[in-house]
Image 1: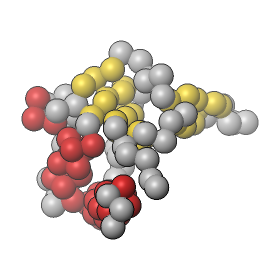
Image 2: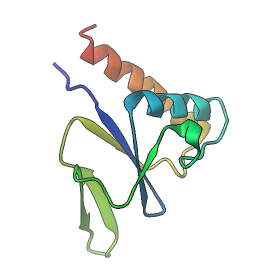
Image 3: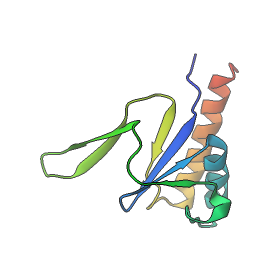
Length: 105
C-alpha cells in the first residue's frame, strides 16, 4: 500500500514553499496548460518557509554543489524552476498515478 502524500515542498533560488497536495495539483494543472505561476501570489496557496523544512536534508557533492533529499515518504520535493509545459504534464500524470495507487485502484 502506498503512503499518502501530505505536503509538497518546492525549492527555487534557495527559497522554500510548502503546499498541500491539492494546491500543488492546481499549480501543476495551470502550468501544464501553458500558464505561469508565482508561488508568492495568494492564489497559489503556498506558504513561504524561512528555512528548508525538517523533512528535507542536504548533502554536498564532490564539486561542492548542494543536493536535497526527503527523509519522509509522506512528502514530495520539487524544483520546477526550469520545467517546461511538458514537464508539468508529466508531473500531472505522475500525480494521477500516485492518487490511484493510494486509493487502491
